Length: 429
Image (cartoon, rainbow, N blue to C red; front, side, top):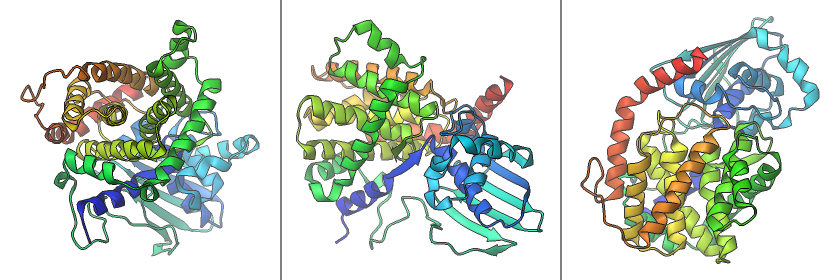
């Protein structure tokens, strides 16, 4: 039987995917690696076209295992590895001794930023001295390889997916759109989930928790978590522990950490922001595993609702506007706040964070997340005293999902103009 719960479980299974480094790094390297794999001659040119959104997110972010930044670095890494079956983890096998050979590929690479394409867009045109022309295209979803062509003919390979958008993909007879789901639908689904159906979320929690340990030892000096830990001199409360761990994990990942994480809704930082706070909270308060799993399901799906409206890649910071809001709602779920209070909490947070810009992936993304989550903790504490609703003020609706839809319309209308200006200012530096 096709029910809303069936559909939500199906959606939840599509949201969690492993990724190495910023997920846009994975898009570019994957598209290049699949072309290089089928080239038998020496590369003479590689023309890469990416959307404004992909370019923005790879311009300043650390590249795992390479130690230096830049989109041409990512392209060269993907070309060298030639292991597209690893998808978003394609750069995981690079070793230090490979770097000189990778740098030799840089002169053959041309990159163009294109407009009026899907935000998740990368195309590659590779030519060799044997007259080979190999092409690939990724769009819509981060690992959605649409085609690979060799001299104009399609290559049939097992990891070609050609997915449609999440709203369209369903094997069930009746299909639900994102707008068909209410906060109550997601809440009821989460409450009724059994462990067998959502146990895969625990594996994501454990994988992302590894980055907490790594981040504690390897975080950049710019991490607010690192500085904040010095101010409290080992006297952390549970909120402090979450802020420090999350900030260190995100800043380390954005600096080029070589560990794989489980992403959520197309972003590794989203995955960390959703899972790390819930995992730490459940550990500190010794909650049952099923409580953690249900809170994770709730948070991932709240994030899905937000990202489906503002866009997988938009002008706004998805980690703050989406992941922090969804994760804080998950903490409220674990604290057994009533649904009406969670609704108000989400509205307060959207009122505070809506419109915060994304100026590209980089270590300082962790500072935005740290500041936003610290604010979220304050609102969460206040909500235990049943603060008044702000529904009806400005664009905030009594129903937080209606608020999300309003923010989505604003985001979609303004995103291209904003991202244009953001990229100009990134390039000015």
